[in-house]
Image (cartoon, rainbow over the protein chains, first blue to last red):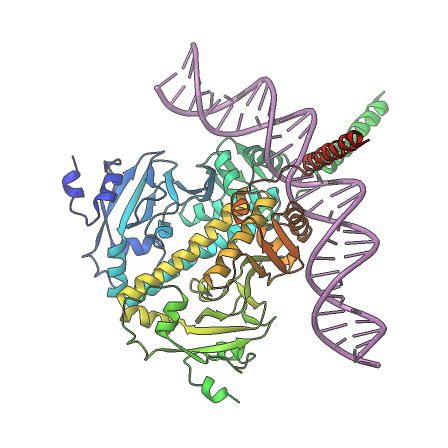
Length: 282
Length: 282
DNA sequence: CGGGAACTTGATAGAGCTCAAGCGTGGTGG
DNA sequence: CCACCACGCTTGAGCTCTATCAAGTTCCCG
């Protein structure tokens, strides 16, 4: 067992209890501060002399919870690889998806205020997560002013991301929400070095819908509609974006009956043309 | 003119330009660090020995902008008195209200990431705002570890507040959104030492609707419906909450036609009772 | 190969939006 | 000081978008 190495890290028994469900098996086991800054897209203006700080990696299997609501806070987490969702659960048990953390994202910030997590993070795939004890986090900030400013920047970034989600939920049509969701995924994949044009969704229609304030049926229908007009190709989780710019600026699709009429008119015209040419042939 | 005193504060020309529109006239002109911690509800475990830091107050008149989108970031702001709204404006010019900062709230955090504000803050009433240069903010954090942790806590609090708004927008009916909005206002007024039971709205129906992802008509109708069933009393901006607990847990009003039917049935029963007793009297 | 979860598609209904008209109110200028 | 005007608010009617309910199909995992 690797429990011996795990006992080295400075973390409370609470987090060890939680983390023990996920046994490190493969992959990197520790990251230096420099690697972490790199992951978080913090410009490190410092030479690589901060190797005294090492942060443990932990593997989670799809479906496992990294932290749960109400659990005492003592860790921040950084995604090294894999895909997660972060959710709140309201008093009547309804989930609300808040985001889909992936490589380079920091999560768990909501726990700082109140000393308990107010959200829950669930692995959507096998994941490798870097543990950052909050105490260590504070220590690092104190040790390096520049880094501390960057840390505020990362938290601010998260705030801005949420504000943009509020804007989406508050004012966009279902189609526009789905379109922007795809664009935002595309950009994140591109950032991670993958194709921004084609990728696999890591979440269900249900989760997408919940995130966007829509039902899974509406998400599915919208995908189909985008597919029908050639904006994208969808096959289950596989997505190809054909016109990212159109998706980015889309506000509302022409009403389906208008589209149907247009299609019908076009088909009719073609049929007539065919018929007349057929007549001519006779 | 008070420009001489304003030139004392350490702020860039950009912020001075902006701030110069609002001339300090009355009220406190400076706050100590201890007063600020108090305002932000940070438990100050330290004696009042941090009086070397002083932060300027500035008055804004209703309608004035404290900062605008794209403006270079160098200040955080704390509301000393008055009411504001914070908004983002999307690429096609649509506003989205993100919140209504009031006494004790910190705003401008969104500017840290990216060095420019991504939101705009507008005074809804005459306001007194405390200027906190970000540089000074960082310096304070470095000077006092405890305070720094508290600062992270305030940012985290803001994040959690936004998450709760996302939950509201993502899954609640119009009625539930309005109900919770009233409850949340009530709690904030109570925190500030005012009545949580009756207060005046400081924002228009339009702004409330925008904040909640609804139209102003829906907000108005919902207020009227709550008023009709005795949950609240509304008269323009004046609000009285009669049953806060009901508002807190409300998910959906019984459909209006059902209510109408119920009302009709009740009225009928009463009428019948009256009729039969009248008959008896005959 | 079987079973369950995820996804698609259709039909229907209703919540909330849009458009429209009218009223109250507060601020402003004559 | 009054009259007017603009803005905010209310209320109504109709319509649209999206949720809901209901099958079916596909895919994946055991």
